[in-house]
Length: 158
Length: 54
Length: 234
Image (cartoon, rainbow over all chains, first blue to last red; front, side):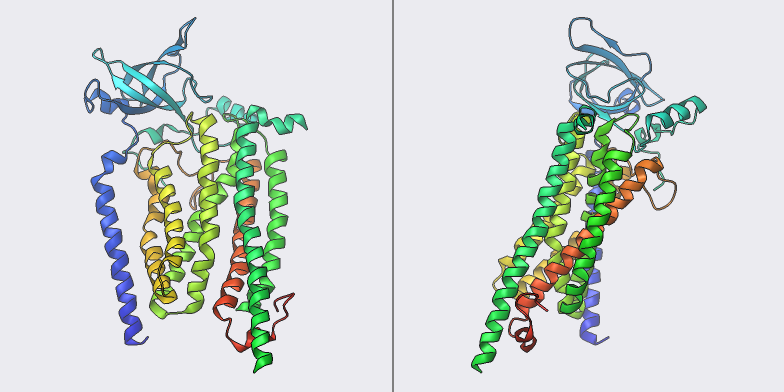
């Protein structure tokens, strides 16, 4: 390699390392801001002040969904298998909303500690299978675990 | 056939997505082919004219 | 290189059409509906291959740009320039189809989560690269500036890839990973891999065609150009 090429190689490498380091610092500094949602445990620990809008993500507790008879009002509980918080919402829920499903809700905590959602989004998992296979897995109690995605501390192996 | 086109009620989302893919990717392929033809004809013609003159 | 590209292009194109036909048939007709998402999940057959190719194309562009910067190899610059439009198209397809998948499943067209935002940044990198190529007065200057942008922007690729693991996102984690079993039933996985192959071949086909155009216009004054047949270009 000629000295000139070597010099350019070093220059390009240094440039790339610099930008990568800057990106790493930036990403680390804004780690909290890049988090799309808080977990019910964060909320229970008082991470967010009442009245301040934020997103919360978790699983809809089985058997907790109560729909109002005449209106679109719905009440359910959201959990990360550690802490559970009550949620109220009025509006149209996404197709995937159901008990046991992961969701992300936008809204704020009221004085009583209930999360008043203004928007509810469904979070689906990375598993795809035909209904018959899902039924068979369900019967065998071997449904893939998806709860891991709700804990930012849990590292899902790539 | 109608059942297939309906996509379990998601026809709008599924077929719009496939149309976007067709338009964008097909568009790039078609544009590249047309550009290739245009550049080929004009560049080679000009090169041949230059050669004949010299 | 010019002749080789011309010889390879129809092969890539033909094989692409073949795998596209089989992949679409298996994906849209044969594969069963998903247990949770019904038929809407079929968008995956263009969304995921497009997203993979948007990153693959960028890595090719950044690598050849680095080679061009260091060794001043003209052909590496041609590869990078030829890749940009198809890469931008792949990125746009991934974003648009993702949006049309997000609306019925998540309940929103768009959300500023880490995965979606970093993929949008990728689109801007492609567009910025293409704009920069035509922006400066001297071809050498713009080639060098664009190559620097391409190399620097490669930092975004690991961010896109790992965003779903590093942060809480609405986007789900990867279904198919290098290590471990894919979390997808085989009947649904086969068409996905075929479509990924088809998109890969589409990229190589387009790369060959665009490289020929670029080489021809750059070398327009070379003596070998006058020997070519106008109709076939060979």
